[in-house]
Length: 227
Image (cartoon, rainbow, N blue to C red; front, side, top):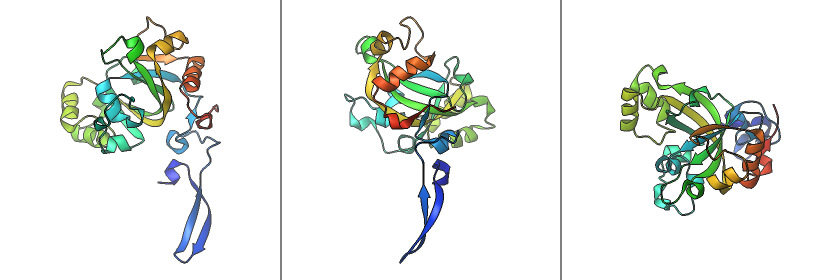
């Protein structure tokens, strides 16, 4: 597991309890692999905004819970504890995502007030894999793939399998939560998104992504610009 996340054995340490491996992990260099490099954010990737409904957002990304949400919404289950997440969607364009693409997770509004004030960018993630639900040979294979990392219940996944309502499965690594959530108004006013553009899934410019990183308070130590 340590090796999977970028640690390498550099020495051995002997003591009363026996011989232990000494493992080291660099946070200044990228290997080019999404998992090995986690939680570093590689700016070389393409950038996109991905919207998630409030009902699913906090269950999937508990560290990005809004301050005014009840703590009871976060349960101690595998998909909240894991850094790997699986989300099912039908949004046009998501099927074209590829490994290494960067996602800004955008929690949609809850209709309590205009979206300009209630829709917020909350997190930075990196795409690991995108699959079409039709590529799974059986519903059991789908359940096995999704269960540890998805907010959806087995019954919901079975329905999605049957009706193909959400055909695109996006698996991503959860790099960091924004220290300052950026509202839709913030994103519009700073030229990150267009007020008239569809906010469900949209590409972001390098400059727009940099605005989110800086205004969102992402630690500079996590961000590396390396192709």
